[in-house]
Image (cartoon, rainbow over all chains, first blue to last red; front, top):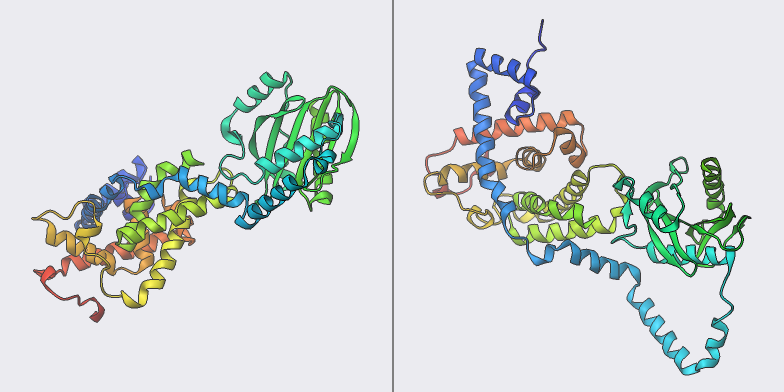
Length: 260
Length: 171
């Protein structure tokens, strides 16, 4: 059995205690036979020990309040939700609406949306709320195992698997159960390398059991909704992504069709 | 996110402070780093290691900060070690430890960063390579050079280094 020659990398890994037992034995034997190298390596080991004794305790100091991640995340969440001028503009608008009185509001309370149109609205609403959320966009992350699927199947009484959109460049981030006027729905979120997020919402349909794919009518988001076998699906993304979303929606429908 | 970032903070503070040798500046840097990590959270690679990702952000911020302050502090330490260390060097080892810290400070930044990431923060060689954005072979050669220089400067240490002016620039 011939062993590989001992290199400088081995000596460094010896100092850092990162050799596997077999190589460690070889390096130790080499140092035994080469006292000059051993002296240098011992110097390195001592040096590493001294630096650790001096510097490691810094991590034991109490963390100053300015470095509280929760606070930083909350601050960031507030900042990214609305720039100040948008909030100010919204306030002015609200004052204006209040001044104009009830007449203006009359048009706002149309008949409640039903079926596939409602589903699209629910998906767009949830996209608007969770899409820009950097604190907790999803309740259960993709790596959380079967917990998310269990939660969804318990609340919806149906198994819904998150479609795999890797081929379209979107990674599954995770999901949550969300509220809709028609009961609980499953929400899955995806993102790509540019940070663009997509949301898929799915819930049982009381009406519109089987509806072919149709584009969303909302302005703030784009996407497609459809229903199959009593389940509604709506895939929603940024307002300018309508053409991009069509093939992805097709892919989602294909995967669900295969699963069913 | 919070659950992943919070446990990293002590080590991030230690790395920042060891590089900058300045408590306040180091904590400011860590705060900046956390804000960026949170703002860009969705951009980290799924399945990637959060620790090396956050260390990369911090390292790049530290390098920018060191470049910014380079002209006025190339040969003086920002704070004496007693101030930025957690526990000041003890009496009997004081001189030796001070000399070691001076030698560490005298290293080129890229070599100092390797020593700190590997020897203090216990990053794997591969993770250190990721943080520094260099091949792993470069990490290994910088580590060798840094260790040799530290050893040499300790050996060449004059009898009472603390009493002498800084002569590093001469060599």
